[in-house]
Every structure is written in structure tokens, then in C-alpha cells.
Amino acid sequence: MMTVDEISARLEIQQVLTDYSTAVDAGRFDDLDDVFTHDATIDYRAMGGITGDLTTVKAWLAQVLPAFSTYCHLLGNHDIRVDGDTARSRTLCLNPMQTPDDTTFLLGLWYRDTWRRCEQGWRIAERTLEKCFDKQL
Image 1: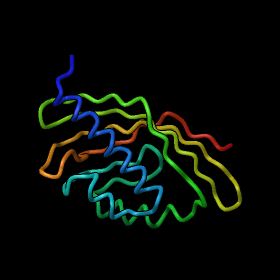
Image 2: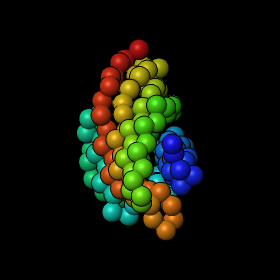
Image 3: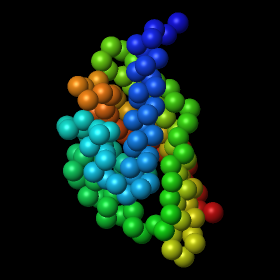
Image 4: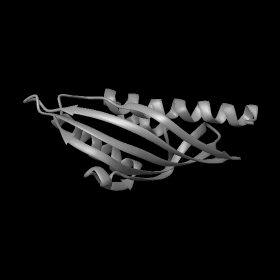
């Protein structure tokens, strides 16, 4: 049975995952400062992206995402394992992306995250993507 602290941690982590998706989908990349730790490592290579620190990744997102006219994140299947002030999670993401010429891609991936509880709350300390599929529709 989960404790109240573990339930709280899981809900807080799910909210931060939603905050990540909202920040990226809205193009508010500075909001990612409230999602990741200051020393986070982020690895998007499994889906054709880059790996780097938060500053590098925010600049890259600002550079590449304007190539798409629309995109969004749909998250689910949250597998969150809390261990005191750290946690690990695996979260499914379905990410349709459309280019200005109406070419649509559907990306399926897993976010594999390592979490750390900080003064400000739960933050992602390490993110790695795991590819499920990518499909041009």
C-alpha cells in the first residue's frame, strides 16, 4: 500500500510531466527551468535529436520546432517509482507533428526520467528517450 507521501510525490511528478508538455507545446522553453534540475542531462537522440544540458536543449528546441506548424504531447501509462527524495519514471508519449505542407508524423516514445526532490519540488535530473515508433501518416 502506498503512503500519503508516496501518493503526493506521484501526483507532483505527474504534474511536472504535464508542465513539460505544456511548456514545449506552447513554445515557452524558459518554463522548462521549473521542470529540470539546474544540472540535468537530457538525451533526445533516440528520436533524432541531441543530448546536452538544459540550456543547450532549450536553444535546440527553439531552433527546430518552428519547422512544424502544429504539434502536441499526449502522456500516459505513468510508471513512477518513488524512493525517498529520488524517483524513476517511464511515461508514454504520443506526439503528432505536422509540417506547413500538411505532412503529419506520429511519434511514439517513452520518457525515462530520473527525479530528485529539491526545495522547489520534484525536478527531472536526467531524461532519456526510448523510441517506440515513428510513422509518417
